[in-house]
Length: 135
Image 1 (tube, rainbow, N blue to C red):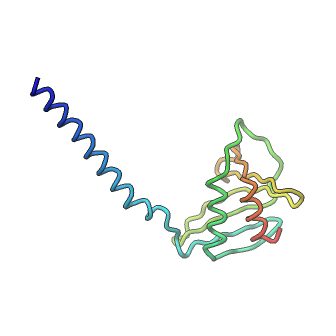
Image 2: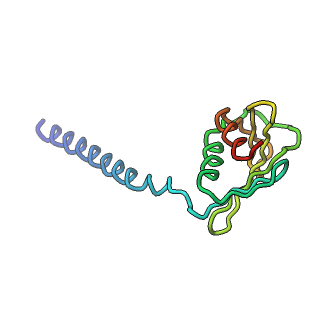
Image 3: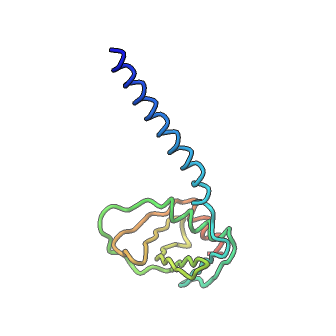
């Protein structure tokens, strides 16, 4: 009985320590994942042609992409009015098709490599994007 109790305590402690080490590792590396490339650029073409090299505009675009909600089903949509490209300091490009309307705060985004899946932009993100674009 004492042996099984001892085994149970050892297993519990092992799991506890393993969980703590995973937590401390992820806590240390998480800020590195959030850091933005200081030389990143945002290029908008279409109805508006602008290039931004400031962190605020790039952050607004990234936040809009990350908070967008997937639209279910396969889409067949009209032509986009904007294209948004994020360029990192190594010259790697990530392109998105963007639909914004001057009349309202609705918007949609689609990765340029996957034109059958669309994402609805959050209303606040649309407002922020339109503000930096003077759109």
